Length: 216
Image (tube, rainbow, N blue to C red; front, side, top):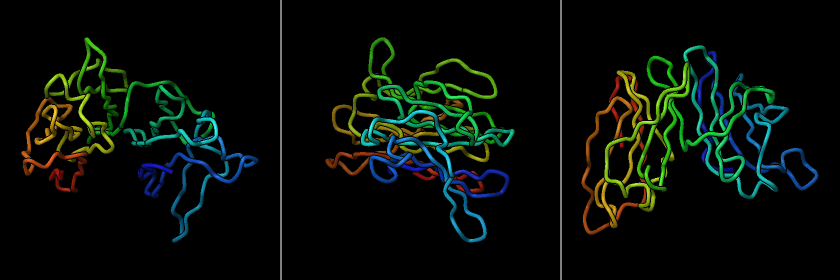
């Protein structure tokens, strides 16, 4: 299992995760995504997979990210069909499932769902975002140098939605040594944080408090 996603649906804590369950004869061996619900102090894992597709043998499954839209519908994004990530809607296996360019997903304070992606192929190189719900938006590049997508540790493992608005992701802002972190938002705002040179940072994550304070 790698990088599970945590969301609240109808007041109940849900954890989405991708991975291998059991041996080769197990239904969970295909590397699909599943979910577990916290109810009455105990965790209960879904009887059926959350998703329709998974990686062969489960060994190549990757990160997973989840969000809940304004209608209370969960969206799960995960590397389930290499090399294309998959985006699944709802908790049923039969839910809508499409390929996506994203690497992480979050819903802003209004319930709009945004996907963050890293692109390294010209002419689009850098960190990008796109709104996927309630209606698809345009692909927009976040602030930062063109080589940001090629820097070690820039794949967004976590993004944060502030209660005061906007979805934010932290990523390297320098090349080839990552000595400065940029925090870019879907609302166009950004800031940089200088590291402790000459140490090269390897990864960065963001989190938002209930009052809107952003942590990096």
